[in-house]
Length: 164
Image (cartoon, rainbow, N blue to C red; front, side):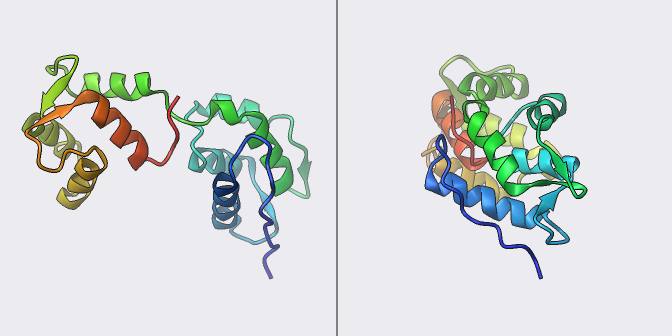
């Protein structure tokens, strides 16, 4: 029987974020023992919106005691709470990614068809329906010209992490 994962009250995270912590932990705790391997703990941190390198994430959990072959939920929650300010994606990073993807756009806007072509030609990352969902999150469903700031906000929303 899996070990139940409690919803902990964390000082620097909202109740909803604490709920996300528990759900993501349960999903990664494949044997239900209430512990994660270091590798799964890094995946767990990514699920919670920590967009850092593997090395940075490993450093975050380096001080967590390994008990019985794994890292316990409460100890990992303490790491999340202590490092809450590192959770999220800076708007400048999303905007930089857009500039790499769309080198031709100006500082304020991009034609929708140019953005759609750039997104839809990135392998199988987006279906047409997912692209339209993204446009909805960007308040751009019926626009021919897209505001970069709306795209940044919509992309951040679509990946489910707070901005900075």
